Length: 110
Figure (cartoon, rainbow, N blue to C red):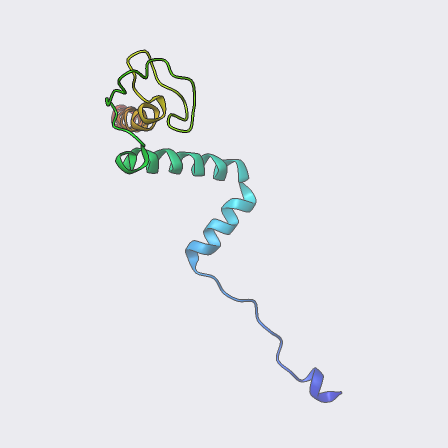
């Protein structure tokens, strides 16, 4: 019995500073973390738009005007025959650029 009590107390595993910071952030501000994930997804979509979009931004589909959503065009096509999903993905770039420009301008002017 003495042997079982004399064993060392197991210490809590230490995490890196970054891991501790992320765990604390998730526990204290879960909605802020959700917003951060959404922002990160939008940023990554803007950066990798060329690889994510199934078609080019201005690529037209001959005879595919105003097509409803299908397996070929997940969001359908517009009145010119362009894939709407591809245009939304490439539009993320514009949104990120406008957001960064507005934040930069606001920082400079304040």
